Image (cartoon, rainbow, N blue to C red; front, side, top):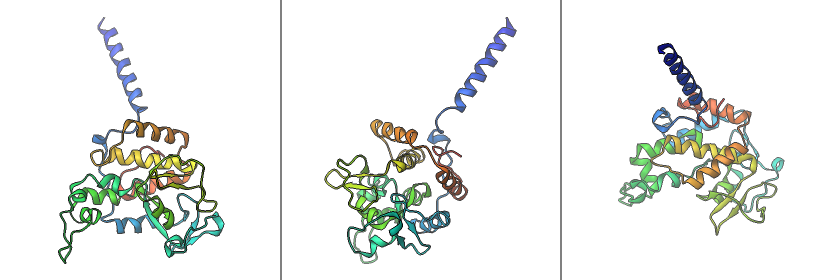
Length: 251
């Protein structure tokens, strides 16, 4: 009888261990806090080093130089305007800063003043006094190289579907619906976006939350567009920098 109970206990333990190993990435309580760069400026420098041998913009796959100049001809991108911004590289937050900052008191109440006594805007104030915001803003897992014009056009809009596929940027498969505050990105980038959103929610759950519907959509994107070789390489390089990998990407 005793031997039978012991055998049963061992089987239960083995089943539990195997089942646990197949679960989704760890809960926030088990995640180590990432060692993000000290500032957004420092993060951009580190991101440039990570992408040094993969200089390709996130949305339109345009090549860019070490100086951040866009080579638009090869990717079919056509600027809407003639500003210098359209020809420059920017580092975009996949999850916009407003999404993880706008509910914080530094952003909402704007208690900071500049040296002339003028009130700073929410983002500048959070950078000045909120350590957690600085960590989130500098997290390399949430930064991608983007065309300056597209970064401006996307602003803080959420990702979704834009009816009619209006191509305002030449052959670049990126659409904006200003009225609905929605941006539509290529299907080949939806998984990357989903994994950045899921990571930010996992690591900073109090600052950045997802509704049930949002999570379901992101998880569907995650499974439909699995990580490619570059995304896994990028994840490993960022893990070496910050001490924490994006568990949704894997190896």
